[in-house]
Image 1 (cartoon, rainbow, N blue to C red):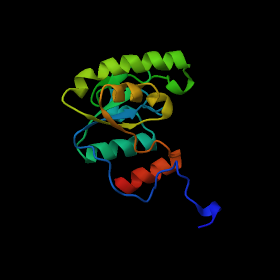
Image 2 (spheres, rainbow, N blue to C red):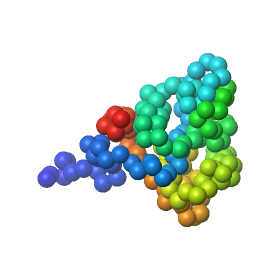
Image 3 (cartoon, rainbow, N blue to C red):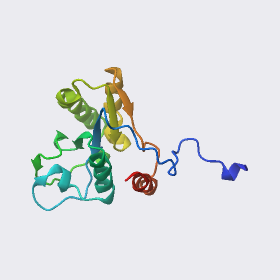
Amino acid sequence: MNAGAARRPDRGSVRDTTPPNLSDALVLVSCVGQKLAGPAPARLLYRSAWFVKVRMLVESRSADWCILSALYGVVAPDASIAPYDKTLNTANQAERRIWADDVHRQLAPYLKGRRHVVIFAGKRYREFLEPALRQDGYEVDVPMANLRIGEQLAWLVART
């Protein structure tokens, strides 16, 4: 194989169709910018193709899941919330750290009796939360950590 054809070591394989093990995990899914215009159950409020595909994957496996909201923190999928315009992608490091600390505390009741967390979220949503969960002894998987958005969508399509 020539150097130009070598697969980048930091990228996952989109062709690998093994679904992530969600059966015993708490799955965390980040919020997205595209939302309905009015209040709705959180699982339906977020409208991007990415979010809908992640939701379909998680729900098709009957996994327990929560949404990581930049405004509300941890949100149960059926909790009714109003749309908002806030993202961690534009927050500074101190704001993201405070958010992660708050989310870490909010997750406590959802994590009782679990050892495994699967995160579908970008780096800014994971950067302080993931190490805190690992420090608590949780096994943390981030299946699409190194994939670009198009690769993530292909990864999701291959698994739903």
